[in-house]
Length: 294
Image (cartoon, rainbow, N blue to C red; front, side, top):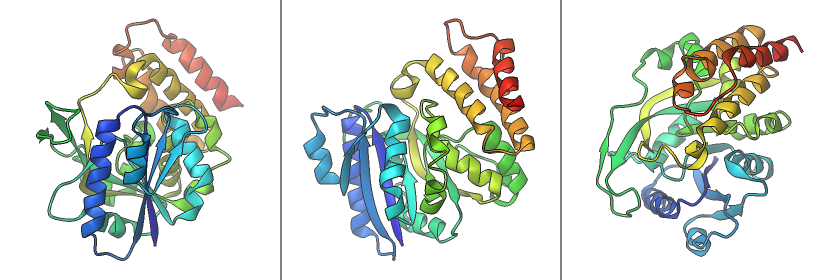
């Protein structure tokens, strides 16, 4: 069984090297049956640390497009088919430092043979986000919802209306390659990574693994995709409109209600974070309604 760990990156070289160094240690002590590869896909064509990064991964890829979505889109298009499963995480994530090798847990999850597995995760905070040697504090697990492990309907309602973070996402490669024709509509949404999970939820082929496999950085809220929160807002609107083509009418309605409540509506938490003027909720709803009638 071949599993690829893919890490999209953009100008977080210290954090990336820290993660790659941790992965090298995990692979050295891993005694299981899966064959692991580590790929890095980089949106910075002039990265001064590219030589160092290449030495720490199996393949270093320069993004043929632009931005976070294309980091994953072109990896999916060009490389995913060479593996049985793809696990993606962010360049400033870390793996759980507990007593169980995280690669053993990835193998266990892959052997469930589902289209998508989403792991629970901790958040970490540190006084030295740019340091190789870290002291950090952890939050409790991000998802404290036991029903997600054994109630498919709870899982469906949770993750159609509130997208999972880009952390702890394991996909069956055949599931990804089967979506390649639909994925271009999600380029520029900043959430293309979630499309295979959404589709697996829709088909009943997604499961939640209630173990915090990764530590997700809660330190930097205003870099990368979140440097311009308005872009995140309009990206989510694009995502919602594009998702109509992949969801049943009932599921799309769940997604629409969740997105309006969480991201796009006048009282949504994301809208409240954005100081500049945005389209009024009535304009947003009109665009969504137009998509639903096409």
